[in-house]
Image: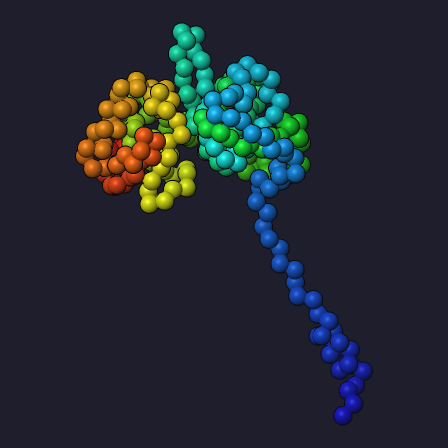
Length: 231
């Protein structure tokens, strides 16, 4: 039986119909990928110095970084530890307020600040994400301020271990500490002896176990959260 002209046209349209293209949501930071240059910084080396011109921004691909402020009396204050996936160097000022140092061997993506500023102006999704990261960073800074002003040594160390566990991939609640005990002390506003003594107390109480000097297993996370207290 011959098809009518209308039926032929409809059949052809059905056979040649193209399925709607699947649109994948772009992650906000993907906009940075074409702007960056990969660099490697060895452990202990400076990524940028305090007071240097803030002409580049960075994203950590692997490794860990500390942000350091040298006080007038020579005391070193570590203001933040950054890990893979974190951004750094996105200051609003022309000069660096902190120095950035590699805690371990690091691979970084480096971006021109001018290119990033242009991207913020032209890409609304990226701009919103950067505002979100800024707000999140401020919240974290306020929590650390409360921690340093009002918390005991055990509360500070418990908070630090839980915070690091939440920010880094780990197997079986194990966390790697690339930083030294001195680094931890300068971050938490303590002395090295107090950091070591507090870790020993948590170990003896069965809350953590020390698998090596720089590898800690969180044996009892609930007890550690109790030891941290409320922020």
